[in-house]
Length: 116
View 1 (cartoon, rainbow, N blue to C red):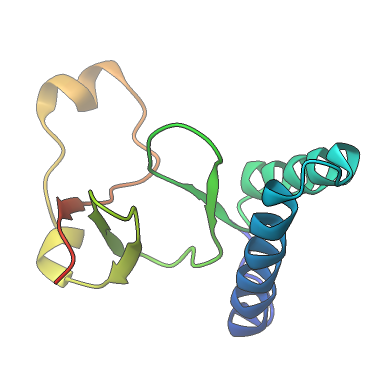
View 2 (tube, rainbow, N blue to C red):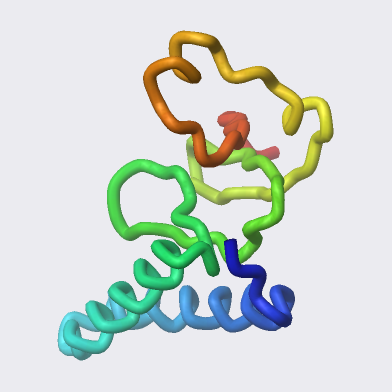
């Protein structure tokens, strides 16, 4: 996998882009072509291992510029996703039935709950 040269800068840029896209979503007269082009670009980044698509339900897709091992907490109320690290989760064994029938590329734990 490709590691971005300045992951913290990429994280800031993607966060800013996400905020701008939320404004575009509210404006029905905004350019859908621009949104589609940016989404295609982000999907291309994901296909090339520069970012990951974050687990979630429905649209829009959410992207994660952190490609080093980490896990997620997702609030079921507001859909906020928090990154966290836990070495014991990194060491979880893949069940034999999965390992024998599939190629495992990533292991990531997702904890779901509610914000305070």
